[in-house]
Image 1 (cartoon, rainbow, N blue to C red):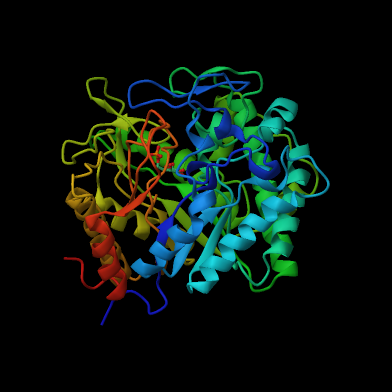
Image 2 (image 1 turned 135 degrees about the vertical axis):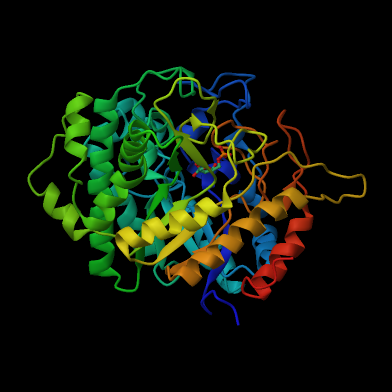
Length: 481
Ligand code: BGP
């Protein structure tokens, strides 16, 4: 018998801006990633205020899910997906985010996607905002720093909640909301980069913690309002949060490292979910704000709404772990939204992300111990270079190894007693990398013929991991060989 529950939600995850393409089709407006050029592991993406001619913006075509959704969802169904995590691109529905009337063509596209999922017996899990805020709101309000954005977001939520009733039950409010606690999040998440043109790199972005944390407060309020509204109007909707969890370990047993690590875990990994799950700012945040010159401006009623809009389930992305140290002689390593220090016991991906399957078991236990609500791993996976063989096959045994080891540890965590609802590995079909804008950094079970220079015929091919994952799902996670 499987240790995973019978209704375990096996599937995969994508985000609209990273795979749909059709960035200006049928009335869609530009969202923040549409203004981000391609980059690489060594050259950061750039944010531009206008679309520069002759420059590659990878979200513009991406892998064109917009025109391939039927074929792609059929492939997901062939693997046996029970759930498909995707997002709605806000600017397909409201091109600037400020319109009163939604764009019917945009709404109709997601009708087609969700109907197609239904036809295949796949449950959609929808991220309402996955790094896709309307660029017009960056220019007008400095993104989420403007309190006005809360009402605009609520209007968007009300429209999609009503439209997709009967088609979507599982919703996540903001993707990786805690990226707003870090400089990197200012571009894709909080949008607090009005007037900025330049590299999107952790070291080069101008940083303003005051505007990031104020923006984050507005996202908390918006998330809670959306949750409360959904609970009141659609009792069968299940509302989740989504955290980028980068587990930190103290590099040494020097008490200074232990404390530094605790502080990193608090503000990076726990702060946002403490608000979204427990319904209030955690005690440790005030000192952090005082020491970082941050004053959160709240309106009467904000604290109440945070209490009333707590989520039903907790979701997170998990790719890696990092070490934290106060010592100077330790090598730094990369990550999706932040950096840390090298763990001598771990290997890293070609992009420097430290691979740590056991850390997933540890993390699941930590989260469940803190909150005790159902959880879902909604992103996990190995971004790697794949080689397309002459006969069209792709032998991605390294990806199978990575996923196998992580599923084994999820199994252990379930045996430990955590309540795990599902697993949606990231980029189940190859898509554009959020951090680097590359196609070469592939995660999929399905290979897409699309390359960093923008070429490719967009044809789809099954990698070796496709058949492997199909077997994993068919055996409810028992057969991982
Ligand atoms: C997460 C994001 C995703 C996704 C993933 C992989 O931070 O939620 O959007 O892209 O990381 O990161 P990357 O694409 O940079 O490899």
